[in-house]
Image (cartoon, rainbow, N blue to C red):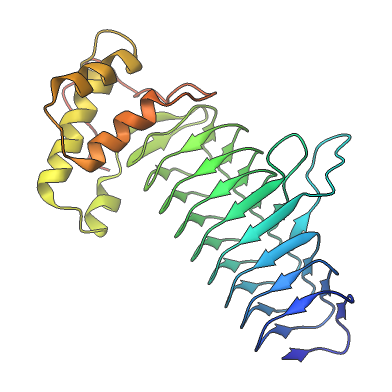
Length: 273
């Protein structure tokens, strides 16, 4: 364990083996740092916050701050962060709130670039990348492997499904399906994240099935997106293709936000992005 003499570690904080706390860092009394966690300098970790092993926190990040809402009285609010995350300069992550589940939860192996923010009561999966300046409102869910480009913003109470890609400067006010690629100030689906699927070595027949299901639901359907998803589910055409079933379940879930529509309806295919 190495704690710089200018750092402040309050009584009660738990520090695992091999923790490094750099110059001018502050660690609150209810904080728990797992083995090998590194706070480089000028970082603040506060509240009922647990940070998993080998996570690295860069200068001027504030991890575990109180939820940014009025009249928040949440003595049980907490923040749980998994292992091997990287939080770059100026990252902020809020703990949960009394109006939510009292819990913000971050998974493993995530990379949050400079100035990005995750709001109160959010759930973030594993292997997520948030580029510089990405801001996530409260009560938001982000699935595994999601990538969000610089300065993208997500409205509270929404969802982004697994392995979706959000382009930079996009505004998310609707739910983005798993494997989708969303673009624009008010995002629309530009197709599937085919690059991401190929990089993850998803088998070609599965990609073909996803593309066919996408066309059926988002481009060729005559009713609502939910109606088209129900028709796709009832057709049994893609039964047993877990990725297609995941997309259909995502669409038909009891959610607060509507599903992000495609940019063009009535077309013949999806973009090759």
